[in-house]
Length: 145
Ligand SMILES: [Zn+2]
Image (cartoon, rainbow, N blue to C red; front, side, top):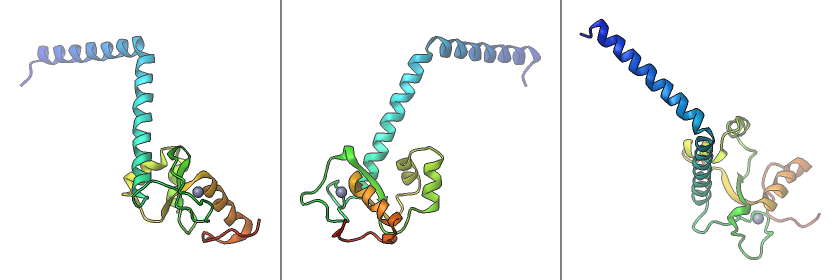
């Protein structure tokens, strides 16, 4: 059973700790922000690489749904994920709108099926294909343009 004095002492200790934290944050604000930015950058990169690995069968490369590449496109700087056949799920769209990392969302969802690795060329061509009335399925070849 805590005596009133002990309780008072604990409250004082807690308020001193809170004030010290405040002062530390004030004095190290730039450092804290930099550290958080760096941590987030690393986590995002890790999520991105894990997602690309998950949706690749072996080597990470564009799944080349349009037959655009003669050689496999493997530059991860220009690789992303897109839906395989259907439009993106409403859930995935909402996750993107919330501004968080799409790759983190995929991880939290246990990497749902229906995504493929695409280079940005194939991603945009495929995206516009649907808009231009080409239908919701990924075309297998692009013959006329
Ligand atoms: Zn491609």
